[in-house]
Length: 199
Ligand SMILES: C[S@@+](CC[C@H](N)C(=O)[O-])C[C@H]1O[C@@H](n2cnc3c(N)ncnc32)[C@H](O)[C@@H]1O
Image (cartoon, rainbow, N blue to C red; front, side, top):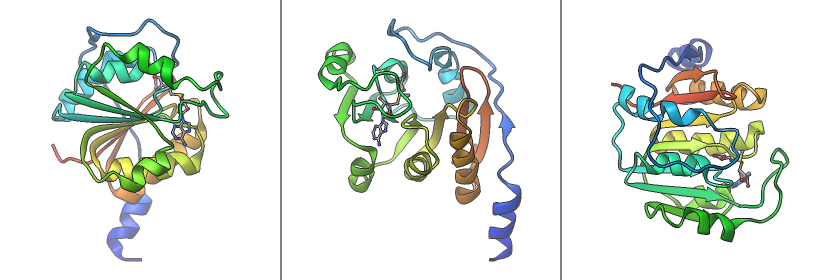
């Protein structure tokens, strides 16, 4: 192991607390159940603090669409990838693609894709300004999807860093592996923030 890799793997993964400067409610929001509620207040702040362009956002884990609609306020294009079948951690395990597509139809900048993240990342080579990872909260899936997201976006955010230790561990390991800066916002079940750009 070279000196650089040694330093990166042993010292860079400390987590800085994310401190919002402004809380702002997006204009468009869905009135539906979501554990993500509350985080909508800091998305504009994240975009500003890290100088993110507002062109393209990708989300892995849409479920009923709460966070996707939040992102649609700030980005020209939002792609939402989900099996729409739920997972071991979600209360709802009924297939709900058509229902979600109908609910999100008014938000014309959101494109929903019914797909496993594995199939999507195998073929997508585009770059994004923001990526959001909120799929099944296991280490392996969060790490694999998160690595692709970190390598294809300026900033990657991960939900549930406080409520799922496996998500937190995966995010810390991703910071070590990529050398990206890592922040954590502890409210609303925790949001890990990996930032690729130097600004
Ligand atoms: C916690 S929910 C997402 C919540 C959503 N972000 C919100 O705003 O409320 C997790 C979602 O990840 C999806 N999911 C789990 N594993 C997946 C996989 N391998 N590929 C794609 N989607 C997956 C589930 O179907 C579920 O809808």
